[in-house]
Image (tube, rainbow over all chains, first blue to last red; front, top):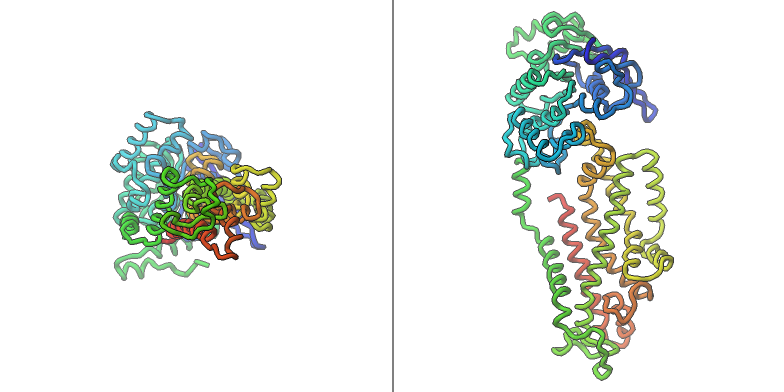
Length: 266
Length: 274
C-alpha cells in the first residue's frame, strides 16, 4: 500500500456568485522515499492539490489515506508532524520578524516536543543538513539570500522528521544556479531522511532531476501519469506534449521538431 | 539594493522630524523627572504676588492665587505624560488584541467585533470618556481607563485591516504547518507584523489624551484643582485671559501643544515608508 493514496479528490471554490472547480477527481499514489512531480501550467490545480495534502485546504470530495489512515479528517499533532510543506516564495513563507533560530524551533517545540538544549542541538543539525553555517541562527529572513531563505524553509519542513513533504514550486523563485543546488540538496536530504516528496513544479528540467513518477495536471484533472522517463520522453497526451514543447530549447532546429501537432491549451 | 543595505540606509538617512520630536520629548521627560526638585512649591499660595506677568522671578508669571505658573507646569509634566502614555498603551493593548482576532479569524467573529467597534465609534471619544468616567467614578486610573476605552476603536480598525492582509501571506501557512494554533499565529506572528500603523496611532493618542484630560478638567471632570495639571491650569487660567493675564493659560497650553507635536513627529516618522 502506498504511503499516500488520493482517490477522486476534488476541490471547488465558491464566492461572488462564481464556482471554480480547481481540482476534479484526482487519483494519486505516493510511496515512501519516492518523489511524485505534479506538473502543469498555472491554474491547473496542482498547488491546490498540494495544499489539500498538507492540510491547508479541505477537499470538497474524494478520499485520501496517509499511512492507511484517513487524511481528510481532523489533523492531530502526529499527522501535522508527518506531513510538512515548503512554499513557493521563500521570503514570504518565513515570518520577517523571526530570526532563523526561532523559525526552526517552532516546529521542534510544537510537533516534536523538543525544547532547550535538545532543540539547540537539532537546530544546529538542521542548519548543517541544509548547508547553512550555524552563525546564521540569529539572522532575520531579510538578511539572507533567496537560496538561503529556501534552505531555512526546507530545514523548517524537515525539523519534525516528516514522512511526506509537499514542495510547492520550491525552486521557481530562485535563479538558475541556486535552483540546481537546491534540487541536489533535496535529493540528498531524501536519501538521508527517506521522506516522500510531492513536488509541485512547472519546471521540466527540475522534474528530470528529481522525480520518480510524473503526474501532469490540466484544468484540475490528471492529463497523464507514469514513470518520469515514460512521461517526459514518450508523452501520450497532447497537453503533455504541448507542455514539454514549451520548455525553452537553445537549438532552433530541435525546437521546431519539438512543437506539437496541434495546440491543446484552452 | 539588498534588504540589509536598505535597513542601513534607513538608519543613516537624516530624519529631522524624528529627532525634533525625540528632542522635545527628552527635554520634557528630564524636566519632569528633575524639575520638581528644583522649582518652587506648586501649591504655595501667595496672594500678594497674584497675576504677575512673566519675569526673572516667575518665568511663566503667577496665577490668580499667586502660585508660580512655571513650577506648576513643571510639576504637571509627570502626571500628564504618565496619563498620555498609559491611556495610549492601554488602548493599544486592548485595540490590537481585538483587531488581530477580528482580522485573523474573520467571519462571524469579525462581524460581531466590528459592529461593537462601530457602536463605540458612533460616540465622539471625548463624550464617551466623559460618560464612562461619570459612570465608573473619578480617580486618575479610572480617568486613564475611560480615555483608553474611548481611544480603542481606531486601534481595532488599523490592526484588523493589516491583519486581514497579513493572514494571506505564506508565513501564516508556514506557521500552521509548523504546528502553531490560531492563538499563537494571531498573537505570535500576525500581530507583530500588523502593529506598524498602530504605532503611529499610539503617539497620536498619547497627545490627544493629554488634550482630552485638559478638556475634561475644563468641564470639572477627572482631575481637579489645585492639582498641577496642564488641563486644569488652562481651565483656571482661561478666566484670566479676558482680563489680559494671558500667561496663566498660555504656558500650560503651549506645553500641551509642544508635547502633542513631539509625539506626533515621532509617530509620523516611525509610521512612514522610510
